Length: 236
Image 1 (cartoon, rainbow, N blue to C red):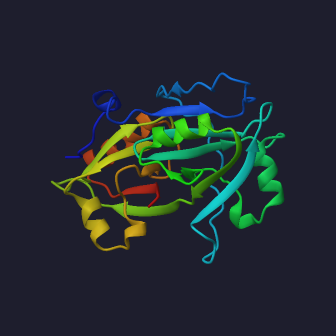
Image 2 (tube, rainbow, N blue to C red):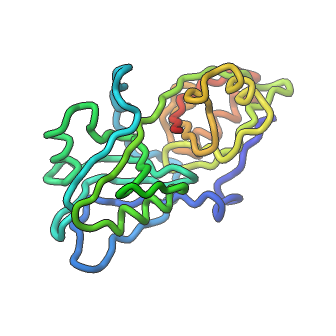
């Protein structure tokens, strides 16, 4: 059987939070983060970001001046250990201006992970979210590019994937990897290519739908004893 956890069963351990950064920074009051509510209809998903070249750095830094009246222009989703860029607003935003003037290897893209704010490493996604909300003045932000994996895994006849999952708005969050076909897959690949806790499953069998529907598609494949095809984002 497929091992997985429903979102409601593990809410306190793996709270998922989004923040809209396309708001003007106020003089005093911070931007408020809002909880994600999973729905059956997934938001429209932009195309995958372009893959970087082999010599492109995996980590890069962005420096902006977060003065009153300015806005970063990035939407973020925090869950588990990862705070991920979900969208970029180009209209007169700080990140939009950075992307227009910097080298392409240092452009902020969808699915980049926010790692550090002013050199401070955040072990949890929520901590990174809190740090970026509180920043003012000249700020240096470190991002990490995702590894985008496309894997085919067997299911059924006692062959569990061994994944514990929670449904996000348009992805599945991996909360743990137990014994099963994913652990077998991980044993044969480099660490950078492994599926691990805080990885995000973006498509199942080529389908881009809501997290709840992705969960159902994995279960359907397991019930039909089929090979399941996953597109997964993972970071270090």
